[in-house]
Amino acid sequence: MATAKKTARPMLACEICSDRVIAARINEGGEYIEIHTSRALPPGMLAPSLTGKNIHDIGVLSAVLADALGALSGRFRDVIAVLPDPAVRVVLLDFDSLPPAREEAVGVIRFRLRKSLPFDVEKAVISYHVHQAPEGLKVVAAVALASVVEEYESAFVQAGYAPGILIPSTLASLGIVDAGRPTLVIKTSESMTTLAIVDGQALRLFRSLDHAVSGASDPNRLVEDIHPSMVFFQDNFGSEVERVLVGGSVSAGEIAPVLQSNLTVPVEELVPARYISSGISGGNSAASLAAVAGALLA
Image 1 (cartoon, one colour):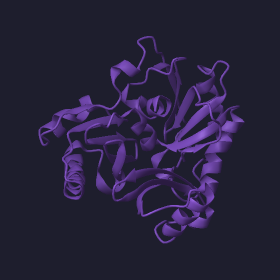
Image 2: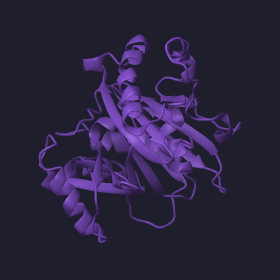
Image 3: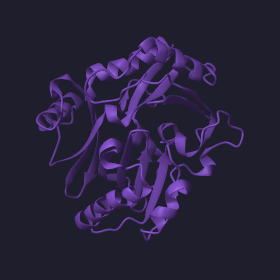
């Protein structure tokens, strides 16, 4: 949930994945990731979902977070908490107008979502971003059960850190995208692949594919899943996707041969090498750093 509680942007970001946590610190100039690390989670520790309990043992998770963040945090304690995509619903909404007061605007968005969520919207935490378009307001809303958000917040607090900003993984990853031209972002995790199309800094499409249902982790199946999204964008916005960026649990190098044999646009890494210091530690691939890098460099 892109919920900010402090004005100064944190120097730390930490992503909670289903099998590990990834922590990173940005350099003082805010130009690149200078150090990062990761720690494995015990099997079954996390069950990310929109409903129900997400964390099996908050005490164990907080200890892993403390270990990972403690390796690089120094004097810093404010952290951007990156949550698993399956724990947060991201929706794109159109409005003619919204009240200027945030609480009133959230009420309007909550009313719009009342029949489209698998949980009681009155028990949800909602954050949103508004993009002014010629045809009206384009709103990106991130919605999660308050109880789910509290689980993740508690883990960071018990670890000794202040999660002033909480954001789902793929939305965090978009912070690193220069979307001057229509771009399809493919963000993969162990259980889900998310597709996002960004154009002119506006989010045009956001679609999640459950691996258990769609087989989205298979590059050949992914090509089939990408096609409807690209057609949707072309039909609704009169433009074609001009490049594909890949990050997360797989890199562009791993799936580019299959994608490029079926697509006519370049397939590139979501995280450019210039954003990662040559002196980093932690053993993570650049692709796996997409969410923490996007969160810190946005």
